[in-house]
Length: 281
Ligand code: 7PM
Image 1 (cartoon, rainbow, N blue to C red):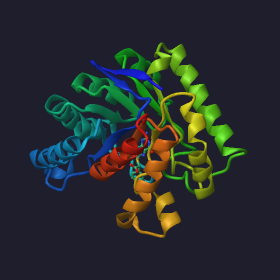
Image 2: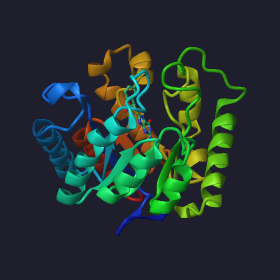
Image 3: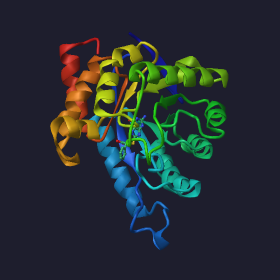
């Protein structure tokens, strides 16, 4: 199936799976005074990593300043801007990839769009103050993710009456809010939010339902190195590559449009193998 989505000047068919490389901007010990200015050293490191991902075949680069990571200490808006904006500017100007910003903050969305980001990836599905209007005003596609609770507490006791029904209901609701705010229905991507307030059984039920989610809108799947892989394979985070690749293959076969991963080269090889066997993907 062909599903054309416009990211800035670039039109992409999300009826086939693409790889999104994760670009993590962490506090930099080289930066002065313990603040979060992106130092030249860190910028070099990030550009090197991004260059490798693009050469390996990443279509997207997802830049996050860690404010939305589960369990992570919250960063101020100023800190988040200082971390992500210089990186987005550099990556968007140097590489042909689509740069996305992983943020929940309205002001960061607007600044990121000015810096060249052409996709907004929000783990809070545009529920923060002003986020919906900001996303609509920049006119970029959005990825709406489901999360139960907040990153600090969400894994304590996740409960659902029916996890697939509940998550789909939430995402349809947020989709409608986007459409009401003026975002085109063909510019909305969905994400069940693996690991965000979900037990292993919840994650597996959502994973099995990926074909259903993909029938609603293009779906982004983020399972790379996550706890669910660790729980299934009984492996620490640095031993989760094979398990992550297994889930990536299953996700692509279940209709996923974007695979958000750390290991871009390996995931691109996996997609090449899949396409050789299944040319429609
Ligand atoms: C610790 C635990 C650090 C989890 C980072 C994470 C997703 C995302 C993240 C996702 C979308 C990670 C996560 N996960 N955005 N941002 N979907 N759309 O593993 O699954 O990168 S942060």
